Image (cartoon, rainbow, N blue to C red; front, side):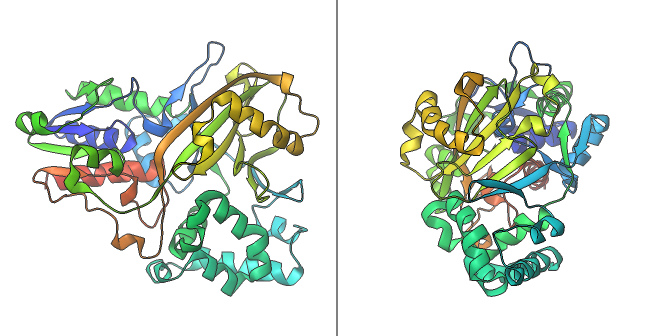
Length: 406
């Protein structure tokens, strides 16, 4: 068959790879100059490795993408570390990523710590997520973990990520976030660019065609040229091309400011959850506390991340405006940090990056086979109960390829 893939993120690349290795004639269309989607990596002149536009890592149980890497001969390119995850509480950073650190956290009473441990234990051990779709994350946290722990830890994170959607977020989404986490994390030598490049090479070897800088605005001509069409772009973009695909799932924009500095912003922490609502950002991710700074010209790389609803004022900020907004709060994280330490900085925004998992989300997701004949849709909206991620994009690409050729 002749198959067109619209969108060159990991779902599109994996589907193209799977279909091309089975002998199908596949063409992938990507509007950007590069492939990889949110895992796209850029590289400064003095860097050895590429860096993703949005922070990335793999859990040790991300079996689909790890299996793909092994298939492509990249097993030795996986690096495993055990970085520190911390929480900001009253302007101090506390490691909070294990039972031991939970019981040393000063923000909760002993009773609240016991209740929080019960909540986390329930989410880790319980294998059944579907019943949790009927209640909200807020209800679950309060009923098991108690209101004090909810107000101290969970509420700031839920509202920081989901804004006004926070009270509607499904408990199944929280289950997936906790269930999936592993203490050890993988990264890829050279960045995720290494895997993207290997996929590109294999697709070309299999006779596939990669067309970047190519935006599709209509499928009329594609329907004449191809037997099947698979959209892997966000649903809002796909519906502009094929209106019959319209779905009512809210989304958030991902916004990431990347700072390249001479001095570190975070000292030992890789991932800092910001639970102070006065801060204008949700997470601070010190990439060079995860991977050695020698791969990035000896500089420190820090991501400052947000998820923002439509029409949020930050979406109109330039990178300089956003940096000026963030600087006083960066100083609160590290009073010794000086603005002159900043060598370079970049701003990346990804529209429709985060689907909002509300109650009964699994009943709202789109089917891969759409009502439109020979048109298929596979994007992050279809991931359930898990949150977005490269592992699930790979899994989705494999699933879509099977359905298309069924």
